[in-house]
Length: 127
Image 1 (cartoon, rainbow, N blue to C red):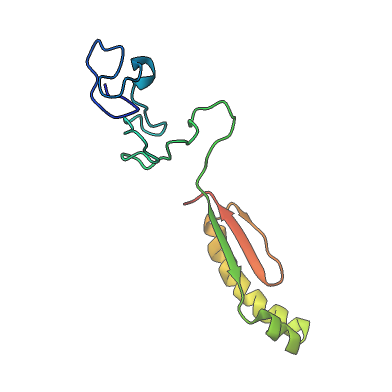
Image 2: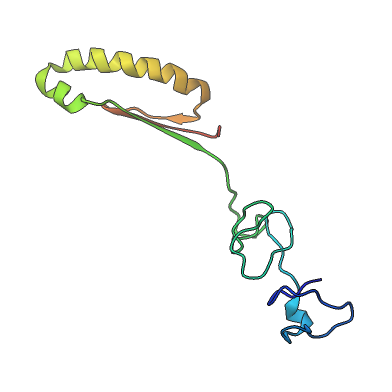
């Protein structure tokens, strides 16, 4: 067992750290909430898995769950200037074709998708 204050090795029956005097009850090594590895003193991230030391436990009672999501935001460059110089029917034909091609790919993976005149944000649970 190591001292959480100074990192020194603690003797088996020690009640205090021989190097810094910290009581053993508070001198035990902290462990990572992500992987359970021992954390060195004054570390900000786990050296084994990269989890921040101050991260909440994944099994906390918050009722929330972390999920990985992918967000795609497609924007048409030059849409505003194109829109200013042409009729709405022409814009719809040009932009509609672009979004139809994009939508076909997005629908293969996305769980949520919406479309406005010049952009199409999509969210997927697929990383």
